[in-house]
Image (cartoon, rainbow, N blue to C red):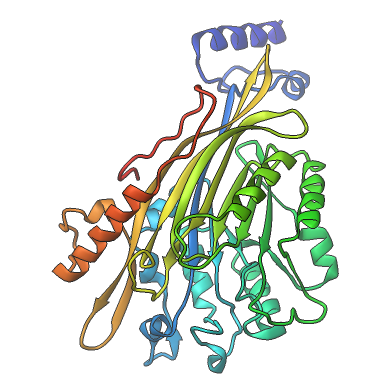
Length: 401
């Protein structure tokens, strides 16, 4: 009798569009077989570009009195935006070698562990470590970076301490809100350095990438995300080779590609693509996310964006499971260097909040004008690509937070 009451309650609740709460006692056997219906599952993603630490940033973060470093202020103005997403992904373009004498900016990057602590505290979940600076501090830098990220609970993909790690971890599986993701990572190279013996880095190789996507598909993910460190530095548009690779990856079954390396923003596009398995669904690419934080102060290089999108899995008795990418939008960000007589402080600012320059952290006129220039450049540059299916839309929302 109780089982019949439970089933009747589910039917009535579904018809009324209500959420079901376990307020009516259900026999133990029924608890094992009756599941709360989930008509739609969603995961919100935030993607940011290059996290770099140049010499000026090291000096800024240094606490000489306590012989320590503090990068927390750098992310303080965007922490709420990064933390709001279910999953936040960034590109770590430095190493964590662990010794003061190994800390340096360009051309061979090495930063204190305090950077990882600040990144974690700001709400970042996954870091790409496959980039052209992965080998800057040799084997120590590559291997120790992995250990530090593990210690801080930061997921990572792209570099591997040994063959076993490469073979078992080059497909990063993450599940959020009943949606299963597979994440892959590759770089075009490592600045002509030798990859330390015994370690591995995901390198852009068409056959290897095809094999990895196939391996990822075997894990039954709902979406496959590929992180690519590629392209030409300071070039604001992707080249034909990049476009060809995107077409290939989408055909193989990749759903989202997040690009880095050019240090400037390149456009994003949302396409409806049928892959070689016959699945037709939206596929998203941003060719370059630009610099999230760095000491590059030239036009187009002094900022980036937080790219947000939602991955959606919808259940229907008639159509089965439908996968979608929705709510694609971005928040432009700009790196502000607050200069004082004693020390400079770097901040990543969410530009929409500072357009009236009425925040507690008020900008001098010169800095404010540079921020406005970056904002206007970004708004005019980032136009959505074509989308063939009408029911899926790309939203570019100014100032959405």
